[in-house]
Each structure stands twice: as structure tokens, then as C-alpha cells.
Image (cartoon, rainbow, N blue to C red; front, side):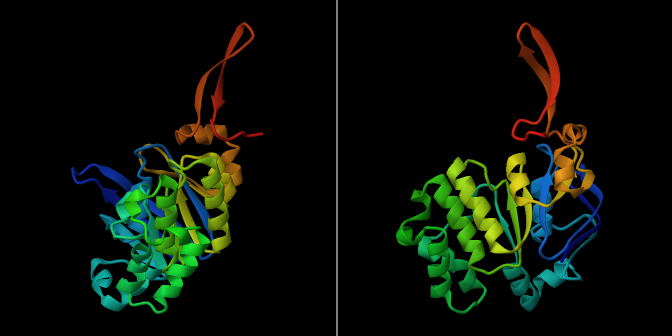
Length: 260
């Protein structure tokens, strides 16, 4: 479905972020993208969504290289933008319409999709936003904004859903809702998160970047979550001191995951 082949990317100042990045996401997979701040997780998701272009290598969608030329072609671009969607870490960046109703309808209208009213009604109902359809998005709570941003994407009926830190600023109840919604969606998922407990609930495969943007692990998530040395190398676990009675010991520790 989505393939990175020898992909490189550099910041505007010329500093290299990715070099020789290779992986493939198959239809139906649920993959979790892990790594420390600055590793390039958000950038990788934007590359996967066609919002950024690689400096080298090829990113392919359904076997078609995502070149600037192909993304300018109307038919391909419409099909791609419907099928491949990205939930930003901060949902406010995605919300700009006058009402919740208009927000959910916006994407389907832009892509010329049918049954717009039915799409709005379905996803407003699924995400418990049906009582807020006439409200202004900026007036919603953080959790409601996250639900609205996700409703806007699901209204497109996408095949591939990328999510950037989807549990950020959500309370535990809303995180539980998020897990259920994503697992029930049946869609291919690529999720960036620091939350190892969330990763364990959502993912089957882990892609782990180190602080230099190098892919240091690509394999079963369960294996990665029980490898504290790997998690430490990825900035997801650290060594600090615990006091037991009068004695202090240093342990490797991943704060939101118990590797028992």
C-alpha cells in the first residue's frame, strides 16, 4: 500500500533528517511509529501523506511514485487525498469552518463525494458530536476537537489513516474511546506516539527511529516493548534512581509500560 524506498529528507537549513529510509506498510496493518522528540516522526507522517517531498529516494502509494507531477494530476490527487489522510497532533490546525456540521462536510464537498449529509450524520453520531452540529469548532473542548478532526477524516472513508500523537491532551476516558474507534474502523493505521501503553493497545508492528532519524527497529511491537535496551536507544526508556528502604538502585524504566 505505502512504501518508502531509500528515502532521504533534509531540513531547510540543509541538515539531514532521514537517509536511506526503507519500509513498506501493507493494507490492513496497524503500525506504531516510536522515537524521541526530534527523531522526525511528524515529518515522516507528512511525507507519507504527500505534504512533503523527499530529497532522495521514492515514496510510493499503491505502486505509484508520489512525484510532484502525479500529485498535481486532478484525478490522482482526489483519489489519493480521499484514501490517505493524516490527523495532526494539534486538531486546531485542521479546523476552520463556522460550524461542526460544515467542518465534517468540507472534505467530502471539496472532493466531490456523494451523500454528504449522510456522511455528516453518520460520523457526527458515531463520534457523539450530533448534539454539537451547529456549534463553532473553536468553542469545543480539546477532546471534542480531536473527535471532530477525526470525524472530518473518517467522513472521507479513507483506506489509510496516519495519526500524529493522537492521545496528546486527552483524558483517560477519551483515550479509551480513541482506541475503540480506531480498532473498530478496520483501516490501515500508522500511529506516532510516545505512549507505550497506547501503542500496545493499537499496534501490531513497531517502526522505531533513533534521535538521528535512523530506523533502528522494524518488527513485532510486542518484542520491542519487552526490549528495554532498544527502548533506551530510542529515548523511550531511561535509567534513573529508585530508593528501596535505605538503599538506592538505578534501573532502566519506561514510564507508561511495564515489561513484565
